[in-house]
Length: 102
Image (cartoon, rainbow, N blue to C red; front, side, top):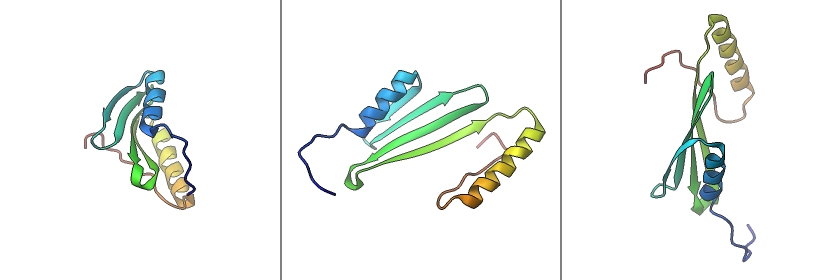
């Protein structure tokens, strides 16, 4: 990667600005280079983490969510959709759990 003298902003600072602007609950852990946040919705809550890995010039994003589906038919359709998506993913995967207490 070419080197230049341009100072780049800390990616966690940028992510934190976006999270705060959206009004989401967040907590920063500078020791681990991470920003944890929760975005709540009507049917779904996202529990997410940005983690900066400076040695790799990488910003890792992890997202977990709880999807509240009131109808068994909708739950079945979501399970089918998850299976379809996973078959087409070149890397990574989505998982579905019926249980609510981990």
